[in-house]
Amino acid sequence: MEKMTKEDNFDLLKKYGYGWAALTAMCLELEQNKILVPKEVKNNLEKVRVEIRSGCYSACEIGCILSDVEGKLIACGTSKGDNDPNKWTDLFAQAMSGDLEPGHIASIPALQPVIASCDFLKCTCQI
Image 1 (cartoon, helix red, strand yellow):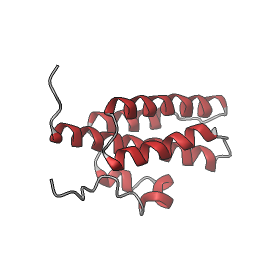
Image 2 (cartoon, one colour):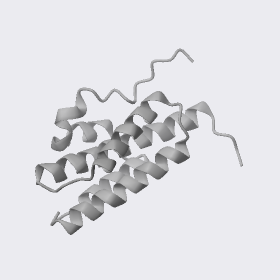
Image 3 (cartoon, rainbow, N blue to C red):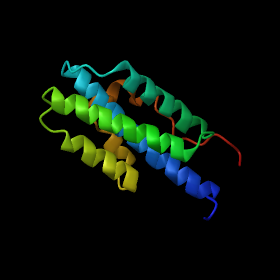
């Protein structure tokens, strides 16, 4: 198995960052629609945000947590009447495939409350 380069790792973290944004938007929309999202899911979203931003955690671990969060959010939404969970699964799939543009993330209304503090993709190191 090939070792990941810094560029590969950055690209993967960028996809995870977009995936996090898509799932956060889904969580916020569910809550706006009075659908209860388990505290564990919200805690995992916060944990992943910190892990992505730090760049010091296993990409495998981050991917597993994001997949778990996605499944739980979809279960919450479909069991409580979310009429279009596919828009979120499609957005998450776009994020993970690298087909999501930063401008699209910024245009998601549910993310407006958190978008100002989402500098998780900015590299501040000198490497």
